[in-house]
Image (cartoon, rainbow, N blue to C red; front, side, top):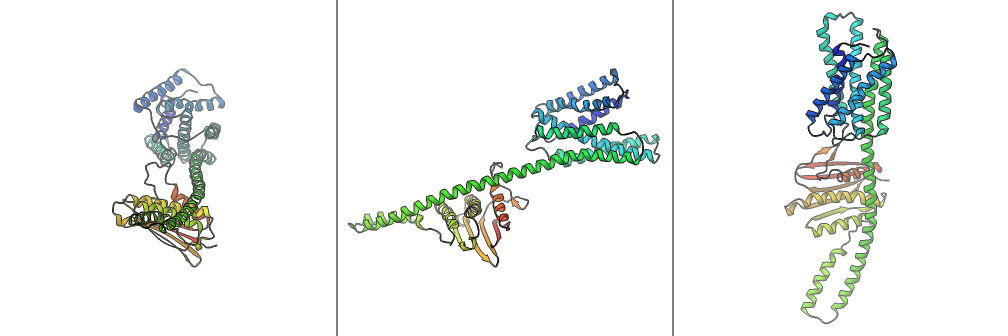
Length: 428
């Protein structure tokens, strides 16, 4: 098989451009521009020289091997330029091959259709412009849909389990392309369209798989958070019970001591001691044991940190909820509110308001607090303001998960510096 000079290098040029596109949003090695330029020149020279001195034997098997070799020799280019594992380099190269082949099949559809209607070679310049437009359009579409969305934190999250099916499908497409007859029938148009769709499917499957992986990781994080909160609930319940018993005993002991010798100093001392421990004996009584524990625990923290907590709660309306779900829902809501008002310097705004009441067949839960700065929302939920995004931001997802477990809804709003969280749950 003897090819013209441009035909010898056109395929490798298309692949190199495709590899560059899929390396746009990944971490690159130092001196990327020099590395990429040097590898590009070396590959083009290698391919051109091979075409000059090597004549490929005829046969479909050799032709499949010939085109597959182009894709394989791009792996060292990507590995040399991209900062990542060898598997990532192979993955990036396969994606680039899929994009290039999709563009090629779209070009083949154009060629078959134009030959079918009698477009002659006299329109070579116009045809060249159309070909460039086809490749540019397909490459731009793949970039917008896949090349800029699949990488995460500058890396391709992949494994051998991803590479094997992708490589098999791509090899199958190559074989079909070689077996297709070079004719101008509508059957060939459908062949080319099918090949292009298979290339698109390779990338779509990867994008969909990555999305499912992220959702699974978020769900695992929510489940882990709920498990940890359940453990914390049990620990907090035991701690508060111990504190209450100790406070009760201490009050009786202080009263007994008061009946001893009287003196101003003794009375003043005991008054201060009794006032100090009274903070632990002001248990919240809402009618729901789990809710009482959450509000008491958070209330103690608020009182010791200069935060005013107001609460109007009918805890009996939450009797249908599991205690660990109550703790997860209100624990996260209170933690978020406490974190927000703790950043405020104005004492008058360090206020948290909690309302829980039944409204017909629904239970309305509302937590309001002041905050500073502007909040960003994504998918209806505020984006965490913590620097460590990987370890924060699950609290709101946990509350949403809890609300949806009971067939309820969660909504948030930000109006004039007041953040409002509202949960509506159907009574059971």
